[in-house]
Length: 114
Length: 112
Image (cartoon, rainbow over all chains, first blue to last red; front, side, top):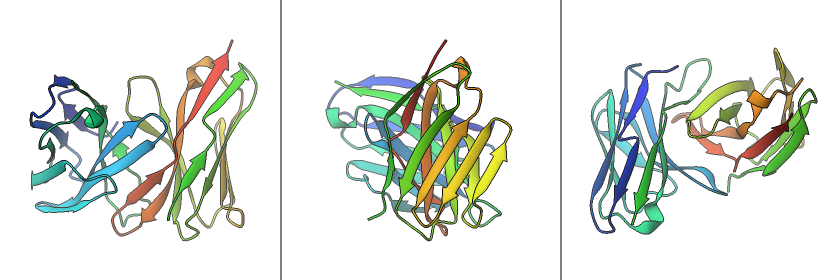
């Protein structure tokens, strides 16, 4: 298994509070991604990073921000959590440009916003 | 825009073959992937196929790619109860960034 951890694994929070999720990798992969998984939608990309301090938006980025100050860590922040952000959040890593462009996934964080 | 479609549910008996289908829209995709998600877990890469291939076999798994129809399928031979999971197909949206577009996932139920 790729060395990817996510913390916390479970979180319950209240509407309006900020929340930060952490993704940590030990593979030295250049690219990191944050997805959310909701029933009927599969996985949708929130933000991704292509290097330290280099990030870009995905398809569902509103209400989320990210930071990457080190290769191994990619943080996802919900600036003011809303109930619509209740979801399972997955981090993934990859090294595009090789012989294939596989993404490897972390175990996920279950977030409940009350 | 880019879209990946899968049927949502498939039920088979243990020992039968399972075929999970997927259609995609971007004919320039370089790779197409199949991931497996067991309950409460992350996505695990099952297999992938390069766009210049028609078929790839890996033990019980067979991937078929029909580029003309933009159709991808995953066949699992001798399906076991441990194969019960959600299966996602994904296509490469952008080879420069490695961005993937995922289908909604197909829940495979294997009955004993």
